[in-house]
Every structure is written in C-alpha cells, then in structure tokens.
Image (cartoon, rainbow, N blue to C red; front, side):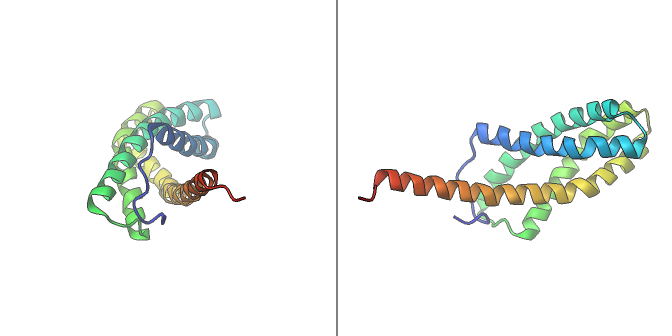
Length: 158
C-alpha cells in the first residue's frame, strides 16, 4: 500500500481520533504563542483557540472525508502538489469561519482579524501539510502491520 494511492476508507472513530490529535497539538502550540504575541492572557487566547479548534475539527472531518471521496472517485495520487492544494483549500475554508470569530473575541476589526489569520495560516499551512503527510505514512504502516498480523494469525508457522 502506498500513501499516494487511495487507502481503505477511514471509520468515523479514526476520523475523530485524527481530528483530535491534529487539534490537540495545534492548541498546545498556538495558544501560548498567541498569548505572547498579542499580550493577552493564556486563558483568553486558550478559549479562542479552543473555539477555533472546535470549528476546525468539524471542518477537518467534513473536508477530509470529501477529499478522500474525491480521491476515490477521480483516482489522483497524493503528490506534494496535491497535498499543498489540499492544505490551501482547507485553510481557505477555515478563514471564512474564523476571521469573524477572532474579530469579535479579540474586539478588533475584520481586517485586523484577517491579518492575524494570515499570520496563523503561515504556521498552520506547513503544520497541516506535515501533520497529514505524517499521519498518512504512519497509517500505511499500521495497516500493513494489521495485514501482516492477520496473515500470521490465519497461517501460523509451525
């Protein structure tokens, strides 16, 4: 199995675990950085990153499911170019939801919130690309190990 080709369908449980891992690491990295950069309390930026994370998690699950279906339907490979397009489209969709939320939460204008979001995008774009690429590679290994274990169970050596 090659991570550039269509992999077996992900269960809802796997999608939830993928999204929780992605967002948990994102909060751990971004909340303290935002608190420091904006001069706000960690509690204030932590609450904002948790709200953004919730939106992002729901968007992540829906978006990656649609992306997987598109890959199965059209049979494209997950080349570096496709991964960059995947990450860009994900972040673009997220901007639509998070800019108004950040503007309201931080009591700033939409333009300021958009500039802040672009700054976050500069972090999250490579983060999204790297996280999902690493996840795909690890998932391939896990699936390969499961297949090997199943074969060994079905056909034990004597």
